[in-house]
Image 1 (cartoon, rainbow, N blue to C red):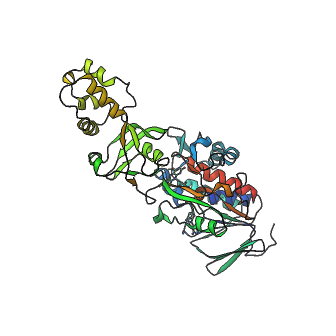
Image 2: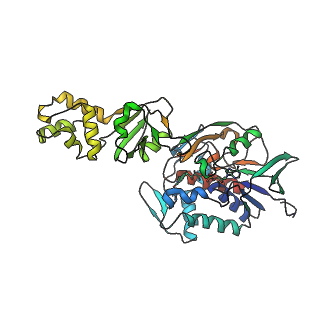
Image 3: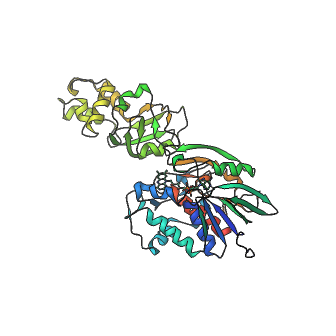
Length: 395
Ligand SMILES: Cc1cc2nc3c(=O)[nH]c(=O)nc-3n(C[C@H](O)[C@H](O)[C@H](O)COP(=O)(O)OP(=O)(O)OC[C@H]3O[C@@H](n4cnc5c(N)ncnc54)[C@H](O)[C@@H]3O)c2cc1C
């Protein structure tokens, strides 16, 4: 514990997002003197815009397989020690009402601001000092102490927590600060890349671009990974939960496959021909898909005229095409539209128990800055809470 001096702390947490606030109050409530710094004028800006303003604050099911990382085992310990039930208990203690929206995703009934207010109240309970709207100008590490100058103030602590997030949504203040800091201390950083991000399509897929605003229940697949959820056509390409999920697994140049008929058996069109021989493909497809999409897909298959006049082998071919529609995205909409950043500070550098750097004493990294990226649906906040809690308990 530090000797009292106004500018010396037990720990300085950089970044007052989900992970930083969780870490700061956990350590503060354990009696540590904590300073929480953010360059933004208010904390938790991403929490405020999350989940369409209602914050999908966790997911009832957070097995480690739903996280991407170069080391798939790294997140296990923290996720086990601070589970969704622990965060739900906190939310309940603050009388924030919530609901499950499907697929285990929990949202506030009211507003995401309730989560930020709760985290700040917990920080106050832990006597966490805060500096918002402050950038760190200089940082030194000597004699076991981190010394930061921030405005015209210099602060010191034996522990420094990097919680400044990833590169997603730069216009909200996201920076590469975590990576620069990590590299400064010799920690490896795995190339950050946009994840949970819309994919863009080239001219060959122009037909799809004319469908902007249409959505459908599909299975999206990249390699062996697949997700069944909604896909949404945009004027640049494809988005919607199924596509955002698959984007995290997609590598540039790779093909994506979409099954537009996940609800239909393999001989669905041939059966339709027997039952509705006078129908055209587009009207049969319109039973399963939005009309505009059905029309566009029917045109792409080349099947015209009544089903009765279409040979079974053509219907079989059309069915296989519609169940395994292949295309190569030209790219993604980048960090400007990515919900998270995959890659980041290598987990090889950190203890999975404490999030402390193995070779730099007193340096910790948590949250999105670390190479752990969750699925869409509350998984990323759960990682932020769990990694923040792990570090907060170790400080
Ligand atoms: C639009 C959108 C919606 C989302 N919705 C959800 C959702 O519903 N559920 C879910 O689980 N996840 C959601 N996410 C992802 C989730 O917001 C992040 O995974 C999570 O916020 C990461 O927490 P963090 O604390 O690591 O980083 P952040 O929340 O990004 O916090 C980092 C903090 O560091 C500060 N900072 C950055 N650089 C500096 C610097 N140089 N100096 C000082 N401070 C700095 C930032 O101002 C920020 O306050 C969403 C993301 C976006 C963009």
